[in-house]
Length: 603
Image 1 (cartoon, rainbow, N blue to C red):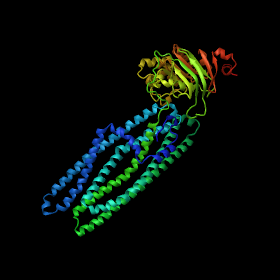
Image 2: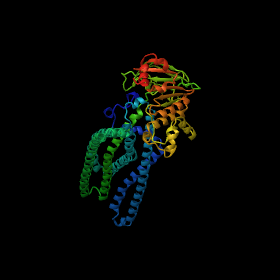
Image 3: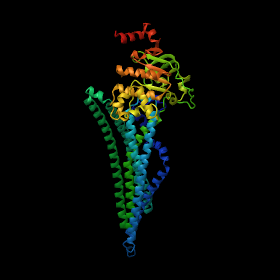
Image 4: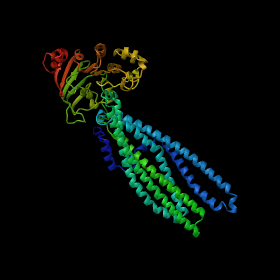
């Protein structure tokens, strides 16, 4: 299944399973791996040569066996019996060398292809805009990056190779069976439709059940990732048993689906093996009758039986690896669904370059917007304002009024439903998003701290910044004092999501990151909300120095942080309802005045 736009997203694993199962042939999704294999065509060619060499060597063994049986024990052949055995040893050595080379080449090829695929899927995920992640679960994406790619690695690195080897062996052995004894071959060839039809029927069932098992595992992984990421909240509310029970239920569902898939594969294997070897028994009986009648020699029957065993073994192996290939096909389908998702944010073929030098001007002109996940609920409804270069503008209002959404549109995480957003006089929809965001520094309300060192977290604001620049940014953000108290200073690892830091420390690291960016436009979303009074004073002073000569938009619930702004925009229910300075708005008796009275006077 492909997606015309990212906005449609991945609705759910179940919908995907139903849609793709209805339309996708058995292993068609694996065709998407061909471009990855083409990159390493020489390795693929060498693996195929080794595979064919191993198969041809195997097919030569029955001929040597026939000659040894028919001629090796005659007076003339006794003298050559040592030569027959030497030939057998040589064939064994060639088979071992070809098999080892095939194994090495295909396993490393599988590792290489999956590494490239994982890199492409991750890069594609990072390029998708937030509209995709409004619906998709990060845990499910991680499951696809890990479990699904591992399944593909197993197929590309082993199952496909085994399948090709046994296919060549089956075709070659079948051909030699006809050459050896057309009469006996007729019995075997007549049994092939009886063998193949159950393989095809059960193969579809295996693939469907494998997809369900993979989706169930993804659900369990998504739940676990979410709960582990909020383990402190979970423990604070004593919900460990509830979470464990829920996860156990999800894991049990995954196990049940996997057991169903395995049962289908087991039945498929049992049917295939019984039919294959039953046909071999019939052939042996008929051949025994031919030897008694004198129409075939014992050596030729031995040769035919060996080829029949090779053909039966090859077909039996195909029946077993077919299930694995079907599982890998389901995994590939899930991964290529992600790669088929188109970003909701479209980049023009020839984007308009932003002017130099940058000014940091922002203009909203009658902007209306609703999030793709809730298209019926307008978050912004006819918003218009202009922020001049170097101006400090605060945006205040109740929770849910649309303040953070304004930042999202400036950063072009989303495009407005109607109206326009301009940056330095250029509509943002006509610019390259990367160039636009390169001129913006953001301190978000929910601080993002990575499982890395303090230095790396600050340096995230401008990759390649020197140690001195990072430390100066930390000093401006009033972070130097607490960083020096850490065990390894700037090289201290802060844990996943910065769990070893306090809320205020995490916010100061985020502010230092924004300072380091040296962007003409600053977006501060509750930038001092987690600081105590002393640190807030320090950071406010640092931000004051930072904002000098730069355009700044500030979102704040605590009105004390916006008193120094040139203008204040008051937004309520997606509309700008007031505009002015603190004094003007406090005396106007509107929404801002009520908010100011609650905060400054406590009533």
